Image (tube, rainbow, N blue to C red; front, top):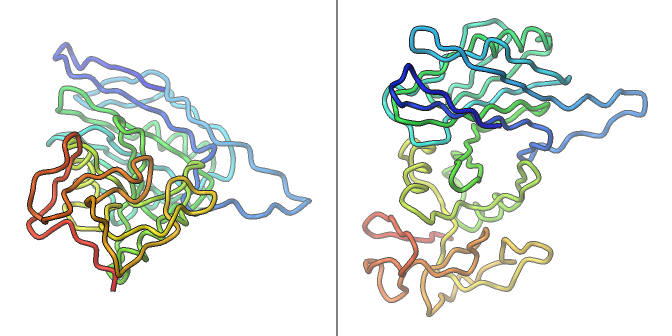
Length: 282
């Protein structure tokens, strides 16, 4: 659900995109239900109309239904500028992750937090925007989400930055492949535009990480998974170029194979540092 708001005639718009956690799992598959347990009702948010109070938007009539809710996720999914902020109330039982920033929040709920308490909490969350337009994604889930999760409006994809300096590229590739989120299979990110590159850079806080590109020769398609290869030959490289090895772009060449420093393949983005791209697999 998306809503547009004019900010006191300034032309700035706040666009709210509501994502309900009916299907969301990030490697968090719901456990088996005991035959005597009632299946929790699916959580749902109805934000209603926003009100503007001293430059801050609030959804004072927001309504929440469902049971067993454990996590609230909030983030701006458009490019943020200084002044774009999500302002959370300070409340016992609502635990904000240490990795949260002013533009993305992951809030874990204690077991004793009731539906009425969560609804009141959401109604007191403030949103400020300084950019000409902005999009906010609000998500609730019955799962305990371990990583901050970001939604990008243009690509309609979800992103997670997972700190793990011990994995090489192949291990990271396999780890991402084992993940699921909202019924979608995970894969290392494939960057296909400058806008997406800037978004992912913001998600990671400017830190480096493995992406889904490689020059290693693939060892055939993964059975039952059109988004992945079954494996890679670490002793051989492709003659055609660096290519995306996963996702909808699987097999698409984005960088010339004969050198690390030429231009990107026409029609593809390749924003990389000097000496990259690289695939360290030892």
